[in-house]
Length: 239
Image: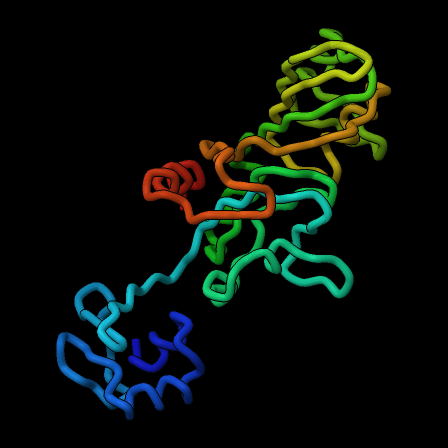
């Protein structure tokens, strides 16, 4: 990869701005000052620094976000704040996108990446990657509901869902549940409960595949995946 392209990709400015840095002697490759933007860099071997600071090259970014309510799962929107708007400039530079979506009023786990292959595999119906949600339900959730979910329920458009695992944490006029599903139809959790004459009043995603929301991440905040988390994710996706 050309040196100017590498530095631009890593957020050090446009190629024109990078060339200015090179002319000033700010860039060193393998401890040698380099002023040519055209030299090719082996990112696995060559050591690049700018003003003495090492440049760590990475092609992909993987972020775990604790999405807050009122934010939409999109890369851009003319009216509402998006999950991308919550990222700092360095993260935005990689042009990540949300893997799947959470409704505007839903909180919790959201994966963002620019790795298209991994995202595609995680969302593929063939993979059946499980997603677990915690919810408050208006209405008494019963074991009959759990049986119905385990068999698959018919949504308002006639679609019958794949089996879901419903765990009742509190059965009352305002019930508390956890639900694990392996697909992601539009408003699916809400529509599944509507199919049994109940209403979701609060919804939070707890996990996706092997990854569980880090509760130390405040609402609207995020962090990069650890090496262990990324390895688990790659293994799950088959990427």
